[in-house]
Length: 139
Ligand code: HEC
Image (cartoon, rainbow, N blue to C red; front, side, top):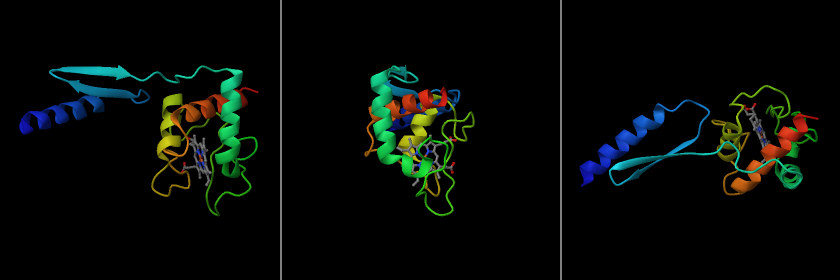
């Protein structure tokens, strides 16, 4: 029994490594079948409501470092930190919504000047912030 579980874990890990970067995939072992569910890129549709919700989250948690216009010029960023411009075309940690979502949720190691917001900002609110930033970048 124990051995079967270990083999399954090893197989799942190998499988996940083969997935192209930029796609978030959840692999779930289900009896003998391996079920793969691909996470939608951004499950929350772009809308005025979403942008408004994202703006609120941004103002509360992100603006101090990333700045009023999200160009990285925050007034109270920790000394020596270099908050990213979030409205240009440069993404150091991936440019898809799913990758940006992961950065916001898990932070940027090892310094974590960009903190992990998991637990303080809900998943829905992270997607809203991404919609807000996409909209801001398109202006
Ligand atoms: C204490 C300052 C600080 C706060 C607050 C902060 N960030 Fe950051 N953020 C940073 C720094 C510094 C980086 C650059 C990290 C690196 O690449 O080393 C960064 C990077 C990022 C990136 C990656 C950009 C890229 O080029 O890939 C995203 C996305 C991001 N932040 C979004 C957010 C969001 C959304 C919030 C609010 C929930 C937030 N940040 C709050 C400091 C902060």
